[in-house]
Amino acid sequence: MEIVYLVYLEIENSSMVVPPKRSVSAKSRTIRLAILSFCFCLAALALVLRLYMVQIVRGEEFAERADRQYVRPQSLFDRGSIFFTSRDGKRVAAATLASGFAIAISPDAIVDPEATFSRLVSVLPELSRDEFLSRTSLRGDPYERIAERLTEGEAAAIRAMKLSGVSIERDRWRIYPGGTSTAHALGFVGFEGDRRTGRYGLERYYEDVLRRSEGARAVNFFAELFAGASTALRGAEHARGNLELTIEPSVEAALTSALGSVRERWSAVGAGGIILDPKTGAVVAMAAEPTFNPNYFTEADPAAFANPLVEHVFEMGSIVKPLTLAAGLDADIITPESMYYDSGSLTLDTWTISNFDGKGRGRVSMQTVLNESLNTGAAYVASQLGSARFAEYFRRYGLGEETGIDVPNETRGLLGNLESPRSIEYATASFGQGIALTPIGTARALASLANGGFLVTPHVVARVATDLGVARNAPAAYPSERILSAKAAEEITRMLVRVVDEALVGGAARLPHYAIAAKTGTAQVANSEDGGYYEDKFLHAFFGYFPAYDPRFLIFLYMREPQGIRYASQTLTTPFMDLAKFLIGYYEIPPDR
Image 1 (cartoon, rainbow, N blue to C red):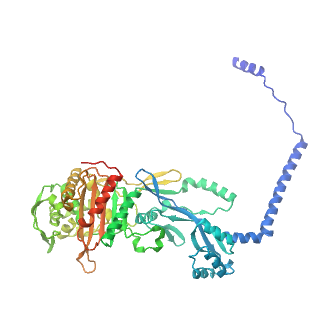
Image 2: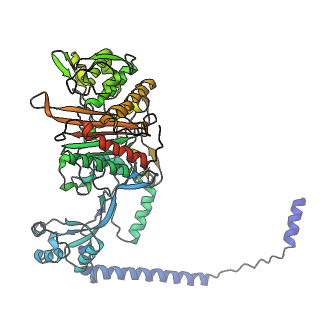
Image 3: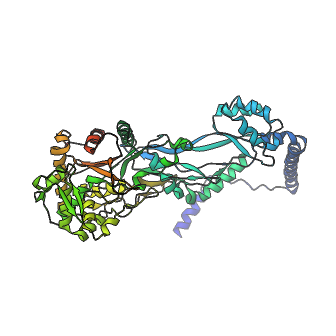
């Protein structure tokens, strides 16, 4: 009761004045309705008159104008972007879209083809007369595109000509700002039938992520308004996907330059390289020669489109020896100090294998096997392991399977010889002959020596992001399977550091403040026609990682059939060390010794 009373007093003592209600007469309402009705009728009449003027009085004029501008509904190409990731985490465009204009004709609407061509060629000097006249003869064809990638100025000049049967339309196309850089990894977008789609590399592998429905050309304000509303409703489901790569653009440029230089220096058939983080499998750079420019792929040799780093296999030679010795260390059948007798050659199953120089060293250690790259020493370790266990270790390294790298057309290594009952096959495999491996498969196996004994999954995409902010990390990016003991990995690393410090070009490549673990390989090239091996054709390979005991990077290089030179230490030591010094400086890696 008290609360009610207080409220009553507050209202009663208030100075608020409530105005009296005012009634609206029926007459006033009728007048207002009449005015509104008149306005609606007037608007409707104006709309009808406008439609009459557009369709009847000026219909021919507008039809001609439309004919010049819109021959058919044209969709604009749309696609997600691909980005490199710089050292400081910034995104750098690797594949994106450029905008401009295209010119198309409607052959039936062109009255004088010669005159039309004469006008167009003044703006488009590269326009072919024969091709143009051929297209204008296609009667009944409503649309023929004759020029693309025009600038605003070129489009404006042609628009000003008001040529009947000639349309100007907005266009978008794929561009690759890096040119030849990472061409094999990126691939390109080309036509499959009348539809643009990713044809090689990441463009193909991530087609479902990058592909987007091509948006219709804007026609007027209301169409854009309603189309925009529709897009907003579907946005969450159809947001564009962008790829953010693990590839660092400056490192990629350095690798590309090094490969181009060494291939030219030695007139080699081809060359390739991979730089990766051995702990995670993240590919920091990958490149191959010969390469191509994806911006002008129609002018390139199609044979260059395949990515040899994942699609081709090679007999890798002596860079396989560290894998053999690591297996022996892991199985506790050897130590770095273990001795064997090197006679310079070994005969198995009527076949004789020899050291590179044919010379024997007598009793030598396993360290000497790596330092002097002795084939007989690797074969000795394989024999001590036994055929079955040796083959099992090589399968553990993943050499006979795909690595799972996220680029298309990956090929698995060829380990068929490790199913043979003959001892010779295991002996030759121990030093990298008789088995064929992909560069990426080889790099992954060698990374297990650097990262403490784990098999990683190489990958070039760090994450997939959308315009709505949704993102997912690349799958299987971290070590998932231990294949060697940490002790064996550390022992082989120490042995490989001694190879660089003591043996590689006589120790001249050693860096005083950085421990680098590395090994070269020189393999004979198989003669697929006559059998056996060529005497004058070789594959050179080089791998290394640093800082050796806590590595940031692993570099793998190869070169096919260099001319006038035999050994990989003579061709690939300099580019490897140049890249190592660049990475040390670029990433400001502190000394480790």
